[in-house]
Image (cartoon, rainbow, N blue to C red; front, side):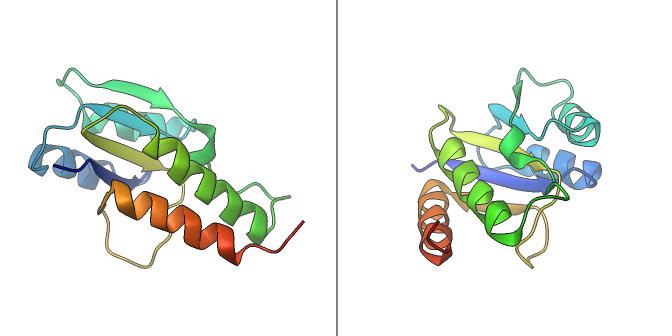
Length: 126
């Protein structure tokens, strides 16, 4: 069975908690952006469960000095960093979650690799 990654936004604590409780595989890891909102959402979502919460700066909101290509490159790097984690089912709390899909977004490990590749191919050469 493949690994599952549940993406939620830092401003959706209830959706995050519901995703954890309804996950087909128990969430065994939570990765959150370093913002207070993301850390609070992560803690709320996994409350009462023996789940480690890691902080990942790649999940942080775009900085004012960061262009669209920089943000996209960081998102590709985040997908690869998440893929490298030792987990069966992880809750991922982004400061800003894009994608135009309803949240939470549930993806598998192949989606992470394909998305990172797709983003990397669309980036301009330095």
